[in-house]
Image 1: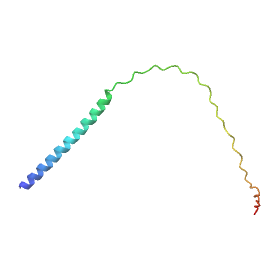
Image 2 (image 1 turned 120 degrees about the vertical axis):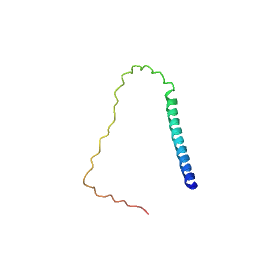
Image 3 (image 1 turned 120 degrees about the horizontal axis):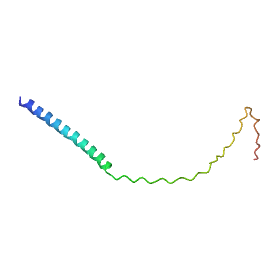
Image 4 (image 1 turned 180 degrees about the horizontal axis):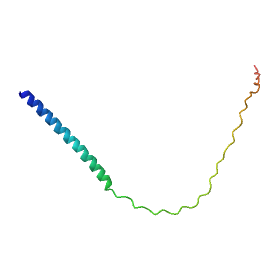
Amino acid sequence: MELLSIQGQGAFYTFCIFLICVIAVHIAKLAYIGWHARKKKEPVKEKKPEKESEPVYYLVEKKKKVSSQYKKPKKFKFQK
């Protein structure tokens, strides 16, 4: 009978430790979020009117036509 109560106490303490850890993790996360929220936000700077930009031109190369017929191969003569 005493063995059963020891196991029950172990389960109770395990559950308590688990609960304490879960609460501690959530408190840490909330503190981290709150700490970042308190940081000063940079003041919004007034935007300067942008100058009208000049148009951009792109160079486009025309594709070469691929012939469907092949030319006769060249013959090379090598000297000894």
